[in-house]
Image (cartoon, rainbow, N blue to C red):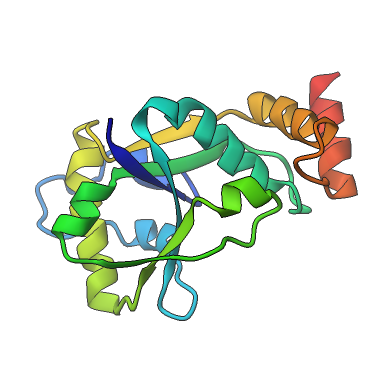
Length: 173
């Protein structure tokens, strides 16, 4: 049983499409867009490895419930926390600001990141993702997300933005 951290990424294709320069020692810059910080902190969620399948859905629902954007697949990077700790990143438990109070309890920040440390984090992730090892990219497809959003609202876990509810219902019909 391993503790994992989950971070939503902006565009899965930035992470899974082969680089046109695979032998180059540098990293794809587009991936940095998925590691956007706030006050030099990177927002992440945690879960135990045996509940990853449900946790990724719960996090997707929590983050998408209030967004007035088209429903699309939820892509995230899953990283063993041991990798982050071994690289000496500073973490702090913080209460998340998502639409789901239970998911917010699993939130924490990777703190006091500099540009160099952010690139170090990307360097830690990239070779393993490209080799399809942990850390790895996982997805909640938009139909599964629509179903989960409507169910979470039915159970009273979240209140959906009106457009999110409409789009989820449209996908389900």
